[in-house]
Image (cartoon, rainbow, N blue to C red; front, side):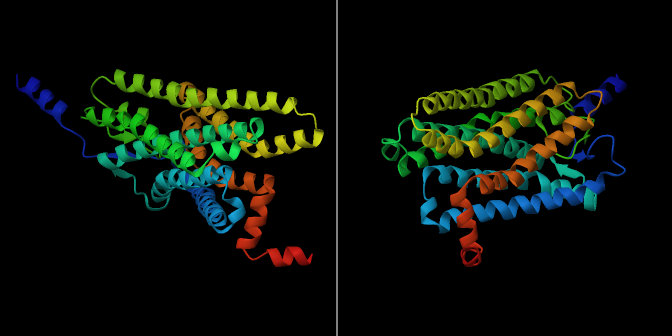
Length: 321
């Protein structure tokens, strides 16, 4: 009876914190990854802040396309800042402990920012569809009020749909294990430590992925299918080339984002034998897009390049040459 009582009492205990062990399988030398991660984080911050300053500074960039790009820059900063500083703290200062509320808050932030990024790509695709298919009606459709409403609806959608993820995780009972073989709090990684049933957690995670990311991805590719159909109907080769060039930067980022989402999902399912691969992809997916999205736009969009040169004071040097 005493043994039974002891087991019951221990099963009711709640662990006070989680321990993030870092990247699985390479704990001994994972600190060498801190330098490239820190450089990518600094690049992401500087590049996205530069985009925000440039869009604000240049009146020619006060257009729907650059509005959504500015929102994407804010989301990228938020996503990278949610994850990378904690990873660097683990690698540099061995600060592996994280409280339960902080861990659940990180889960919520990661899901919200990822969902927001997916939603902004959908908004960008719709913006390009309207601009190419209905150019005369474009200014009357994509008004400032419309853009604000769409952005707020995306924030509300992601805030509400992702809220059950940390709430359900917080309702689980963590009675014994508290070591997470990862450097961030992933929903399934945390709930796998629970002592009770996590079927509802797995189900909602899967449903959220299909509804949010699957729905956005389907609508994005449907929009680009309609864009391609509209472009093929253009009589002028010059107009066709211009239309395709305005979409190329969006399409590169969209393909990169959703390909990365699919790769992360597949490796997560198949990564039990080699857990390092899904963990590493998960980290890279949180920092690579924020770092390289601005570069793609800078290389592919002339208006943005000119804006960068003016903000950085390089326009006089360029004009002299």
